[in-house]
Image (tube, rainbow, N blue to C red):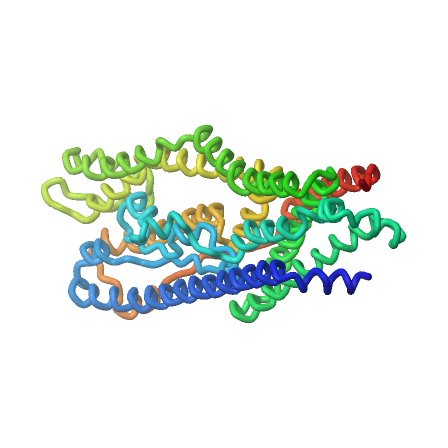
Length: 449
């Protein structure tokens, strides 16, 4: 009987068309992911070559004046995307993967990004995570909404109940047949993705697959629950589409609006103003005041004195440092509120499977907002390391050996990724189990008429 039900199911022209469209969208999303990864890799290669040429050119013209040379030189820190980011691009389409910074005022540089088409940013990228989170549920709804009502409306329910040992078992077989087809499609697409994106077979990929399986199981459970209410096909279709709209659009938008209003970030503007004024206003301030603040920040450089009657790079870079120092509190407050937004969103996502799946995909692919904030933290450390290395050369007005510049190649961020299995999988397991239990309980009251 099981084989017969599957054959009957997949022979439907509507089913074939629906699954074909889903397959095409899945494959397209995978190749869009590969295009994104290739673009990022090309950018990284170009940055590496550009930094070498950039340093060589500036050393040639300004090598003897190290203060002026370091005004121009930029050094790259790269947040290299993982192959899994090809499945879930996440925040990487709006946040840069490369930070190119001078040793001057950092706050003025951290949030620079590439110019992009606003229309492209509005629509975003069609990645595989989008296909799983938004399109697979629509296909599941289309395949299951009339699982029971179709039998009743065609007056075949009583006939089937007479010919089979259990009508409930028959419904379960119909449901499982659809699940087999959908999951087969999912695993075929994952197989294509592994080949096309050259995905490593690691814990992150395993977690990505399991989250996808559990997420689709949630939608099967939700559809089964609506089926167990024993309503008409029209009612079931409308109810399921309404639930999809609420879970996929309304609730995420509501959570986003809530966290934006609960944690406003006026510090984003004040940080910009304070770092700018913290530097520019120092041109009109007594040099001794500026230098004393600089010595308080870097007591190891107190031996370097800036003359009062002439320009010096010791004083100039002390001014640059003051821009960061005077914006430090606002910068910290801004970052703290952004993290609060992220944590609050993740907490609410525990109760909204669509949000939870999407955020989990981004986290596993290292394309989340949290990953970008960590990148900015490492940019701070990278910039500080550069300053501490170059300041003595600037203050002593001593050029670096020419061969020393060869060691300045782009650096990469460090990430130690461990999969938080419990927090990633448990919310989906719980909500799926709840709907399954409710549906099974309702099915005990099944009435065939």
